[in-house]
Amino acid sequence: MAKYSEKFETVSTLLQGIDVDLQEATKHIQDLLSMLEIDRNCENLFNTIFNEVKLVASKIDLELKLPRRSIKQVHRENYPTNDVEVYFRQSLFIPYLESVIMSQKDRFSDEKLKIFTIYNLHLKKKNETNERPKICRKY
Image 1: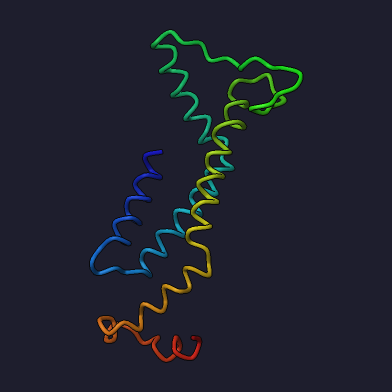
Image 2 (image 1 turned 180 degrees about the vertical axis):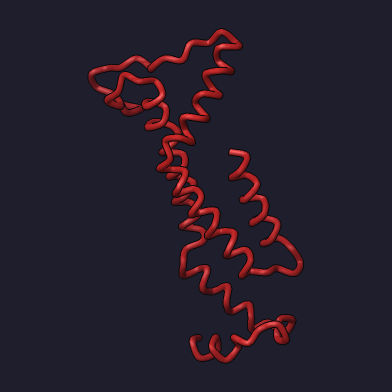
């Protein structure tokens, strides 16, 4: 989670700054989304995380086991596995990353990111961009 926090912090700092560089923020947002999508499908990453969890659990004498199953589950899903690692990957890791990905895609959708180009019309940026005519024609 530390690597995600670092990226989120970078984007947050860029968007809160006085001299906001929205194109750089857009690049960081797209990098973050692609990293999250790659990690969501990476079993090796979860395996590494789970091995660290097992190590900590063994130090504090905690046994990792599947939650009990019931015939009719109401508040959580019964995942069809007998492997603890697979269960936690399916029930926690993947849904968490999907939630973060969807949240960020909603917040920074392509339509919203395109609006960032309007910022190049700002007088402060007039000497730094050659895209002004292109932006004016588009909007």
